[in-house]
Structures are given as C-alpha cells and as structure tokens.
Length: 255
Ligand SMILES: [Zn+2]
Ligand SMILES: [Zn+2]
Ligand SMILES: [Zn+2]
Ligand SMILES: [Zn+2]
Image 1: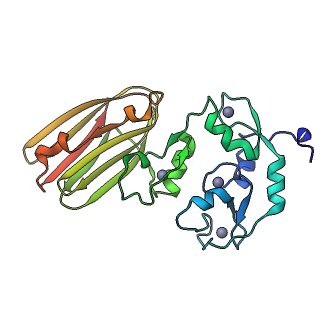
Image 2 (image 1 turned 135 degrees about the vertical axis):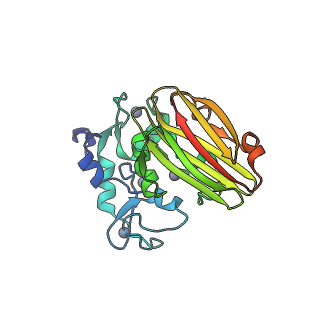
Image 3 (image 1 turned 60 degrees about the vertical axis):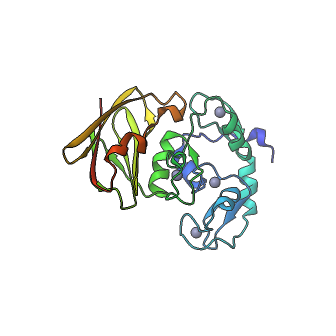
C-alpha cells in the first residue's frame, strides 16, 4: 500500500484509539499482534513481557495465541501524530514506540510503584506511561482507585509488626499522587510520589505513638524535576524512635 496517501489518524481521537489500542500498553497496537482464542488483541511484544500469559480483556489463558495478518498489514500502513501535544511528528504505527523513547516532548514517567522496589508489587511493574494513562494503569493493573484529596491522609493506627503495605492514590487540583506506607517488622517507610504536580508543595507528616509525636516537613518539587528528587520518602531512620512493634499513627497534610 502506498502509505503516503493514507491520512494520518488523529491521536486525540479517543474512539479510534480505543478500538485499535493494546490493553496492556494502551498505545496503538504495534504489529505483529497476538490474538487470544476469543478474538482480543494485544501487541505481541507486550504479551511476551507478561509473566502470566493472560488476555488483558477476558483474562483467559493466552499461552496459545493466533496471529492476525490482516490487522498487522493495516496497522503497518497507518500513520499517526505523536501523542505528545507539543510534538508535531507524523509516524508510522510500527515506529511509534521507538519514536516515543526519543521524542523530546515525552513527559512519561515510570509506574510510581515500580520505583519503590517493594517485593509486594510482584511481578515488579515495568510500565511507563504519560500521567493521563497512569491513572488507568493504577486502576487496571494495581486495583487502586483515585480518591479525592481533602488535604490530609489519615492512615489511622498501624501495628508495625504486622507486615503491611498500604497504598492510596489521590487527586486534587494541583496534584495526582500515590501515597505508600509500608510497615515490615521494625521498618516503616512512607513515600509520597507525585504523578502530576503543578507546583511545589510542602508536606507535613505527623507520626504519633501514645503521647510521643514527631513532625516532619519536606518539600515536594513539581514534576518537571527528575522524578526521584520529587519523592518524599521517610525511611526507618526518620521513624525509628517510634518503631518497637507499637501502634503508630500517621497523618500527612499538604500546604
Ligand atoms: Zn501493547
Ligand atoms: Zn481475550
Ligand atoms: Zn514526538
Ligand atoms: Zn504499575
């Protein structure tokens, strides 16, 4: 097919995008594709990276798949505009992901749970998305709903000897962020990870055990700074005086 005569698909057309997107990477399907025995389609490449070969749509086994040669050649002939708003490049679908890796307007970030390195998020998530798609990823893959943020996260009382990782996603006007509190034996760790952060925010953490309390203040920079420096992470050494298998209470507020 003479691809120069095919008009590029508008990458903002969510209807078309939803129909021919992969339900693992949420991008346009990259040929060659794999089809489950019930007709659902993913990028072959995305499927090969899953440790558990299950169809992301019907959840049935996908260790055996079918090719879809017609779809492969249709996808190979289409061009789309780069999904990053400020980039005006028109790219053939098979080259799209390669372009995203080098696109200077790429504001993608790794899944915030992957940078924590807790083994509880196993298999460790290696996905990378733009902030908009990250919301869907957190819901679909990690089963985390986005909650409205009213200024305070109250984790309540946590007994540190019980192994626990509590994870919540919050949204307010300036910020979409993930808060993770982990308590393993005598180690406690609190992480605030901004996904979208349009201004610098001061975070106040209050840790209490009985009548003892400790206040910690940190600054969380906007997302344009490297992601790692944008994390508020309190480790055991910050919290250690309170960790003797007692019940701690944590609350986090922003200003
Ligand atoms: Zn894919
Ligand atoms: Zn399926
Ligand atoms: Zn681009
Ligand atoms: Zn993830």
